[in-house]
Figure: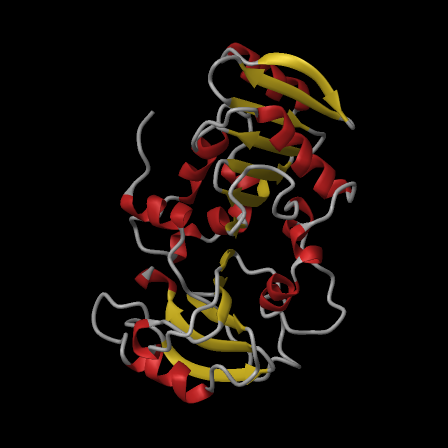
Length: 297
């Protein structure tokens, strides 16, 4: 299989960028009571499976394919469909894509029978059903899929193989239905971090163990327990947001965020092409917001 381009690898592993709010209490993505995006419901709490759970990323492929002309010529969002191949679902028809280590989740419109047939042609064998999802696994390959009406969960497809695909698939399907505890419900730090975003077109978040190291210029913040980056396409620009959640409200202030951005403005640095930068802190959550031209990405 041909490996993705440098741009595609960066998207799949996650670079960082994000969209900001003037105040966390009133801006889009920070509203109390807003309807949570579907990606939150797919992620089981850590310990539910042996899958890596310290981070994940989310993309909205259909929107990105539709707006691809606004990006630099090297960006090919259509190429994203190889990650869930051989499922008969083009990137332009996928509304949501979630990637967590070896697991991928795709929401979109596709023919369920055609999907089962496509995987069977690649050596996947039917393993019954799990709460309405058809299970198929590839013997000896550490890969499997759970095929729903408009959703597909895959493990060991484009990413690494796992020892037991079925328990992993079951955990994600059960998280979606609320039969097992979800990560966002079990971790108030993650919930606080995600509340700093709404439903960006790209999002990457990670939970980390806190340390006493405080070196803002190099992006190290005292007591940081999670961070994320997301952006959305608006006309010819990207609205970006970087969010950090800390153990205590006084761990990081706006001057620390300014130091971080100022030290990373050179060509090739994280904030090199971003403008209209704003800074905001509210409780344990700190946000940097900025805008850049989509063609710079």
